[in-house]
Image (cartoon, rainbow, N blue to C red; front, side):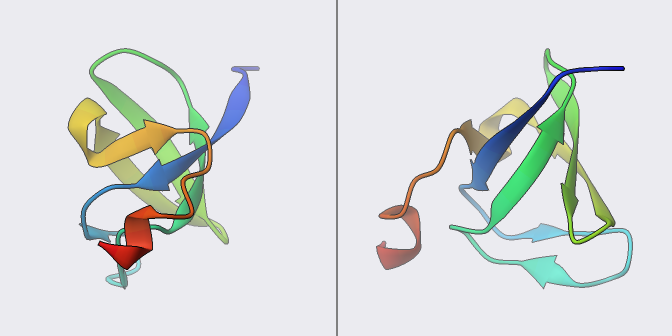
Length: 63
């Protein structure tokens, strides 16, 4: 099983459900490289490296 870590969205990203998650949303990230799989409450978000930051960033939503 791939290691999981937390990340923070830097830009709005649509999930598979059709919901768009705003910057500052905490996601669970799996994988590495240029693209990763991320999840928010079971909703899948395919992310590119520039769409998220590893770890939690509470100040992102304030920008």
